[in-house]
Length: 79
Image (cartoon, rainbow, N blue to C red; front, side):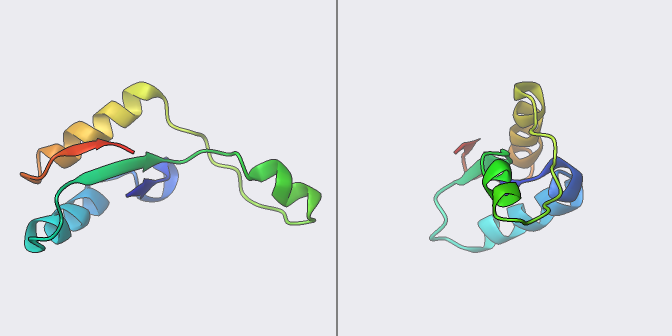
């Protein structure tokens, strides 16, 4: 589950993701994939102007995991 704090790092998104995980028996767990800016420099060199988001701190990621885990019985971890 990719997380960009300014875009989808919120309870509404976590509730939706948890509802999908809870409905599908084939889903064994949820992995949180925090945003990173590794491709930003390459995009600039290619002439693309991309919006740069702030990468979440470890504490924020832990909060995302805790919030999502409260909504699903499936295991949640950092991917």
